Amino acid sequence: MNSKLTNYLNGVFTPYEGVRSVAELKADLHSDLQERYNELRAEGKDEETALKKTIESIGDIEQTILEVANLSRSLERQLLTNFSASNLAESDFAGVTARKGQFNASALRGSDFAGADLTGSTFKSSDVREANFDGANLTDCNFSTLDLTNASFNKSILVRTNFSKSGLDGVKFIGVRMTDVTLTMTDLRKTVFEGCLFDGVDFKYTDLSGQRLDGQTFIGVKFDKGALTETSFRGATFKNVSFQPGFVLTNKYYKMIKTICFDGATMDKLTYAALKGMGADLSKVTVN
Image (cartoon, rainbow, N blue to C red; front, side, top):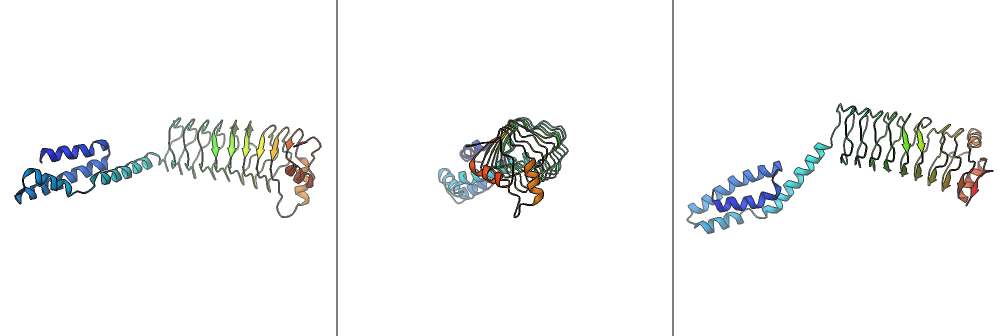
């Protein structure tokens, strides 16, 4: 092939070395351009004219290469973050970046995800018992309908994370700020919450009976239609928190509300009024 044409192609493709699909494009283009150059020379065109017309014939090749490279890299990232249907028990994922990772139907029991960035990842139908998510970024992650028994979420980033309908026995949420997290229709009687701030968390239809949530902060939280018998909120802080029983305040719900301990809690006037109207014991509550 004409050395000048070869040098031109090498220069154009240099920024994309190592991208497999781009290398394939270069090989195909190399062959096509050689054929075109030979045709022009056979027509009597001098070397410089044939080279110029050959290059002009391929149009905006740099834009085409960029598009091919971007597509290839996107597909490669998808492959690197798709771990569905895999046996990965006790695997080490600590500190990895696997945004929008697919961990569906996988064995992940005892795996270490500490400090990992798992933004947008899903774990549908996977076994994640005893997994370590301490310090991990779990924004927009889906942990719905899973067995998370004894998993750890110490200082994890939980924003719009979905835990609905999951098994959370022995799970530890320590030093966590939960923002718009979904914990609906879950059994949280044996879940550990320590030093947490709940902001916009949805606990609807959830069983928190006997839980000790003392000293923690609840902002815009919904406990609607939940089971809260003997739940303790000693010294907790409430702002715009809802305990709605549904359409009707039944005798059963009324009795349950009276078992909740709010001693030493601080709450806004609206939350106070709603709880007072349902018969809660607020004799040791501070209103602000």
